[in-house]
Length: 105
Image (cartoon, rainbow, N blue to C red; front, side, top):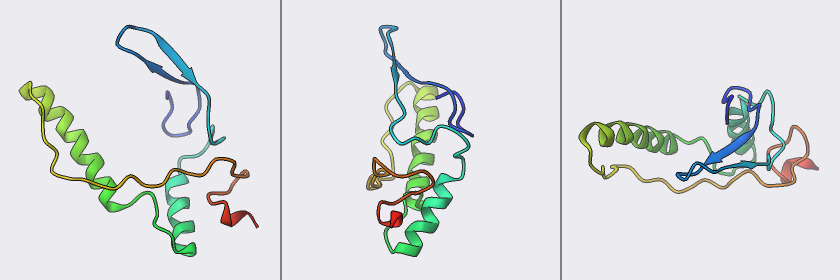
């Protein structure tokens, strides 16, 4: 994904053998979507569901990021100190400018 600020451009995965596979957008958020995490948090608080951008998830992302650097520098596998439950993905089929199916009525 070439532009993490606005989610523009194509999404592609490059495999170790050099093959590249392009993936389609699944949710329609293909431009100007940088604040989607904060918007999701607001909707979650309003509706009473757990939000996806939790502090536990942020801590785990940091742990993974630092673990990659440490593993590379030391040439060994690193056991992560943190764990986190994977948050529910955004539902498919959302209307434009919506974050929950329940929010569409």
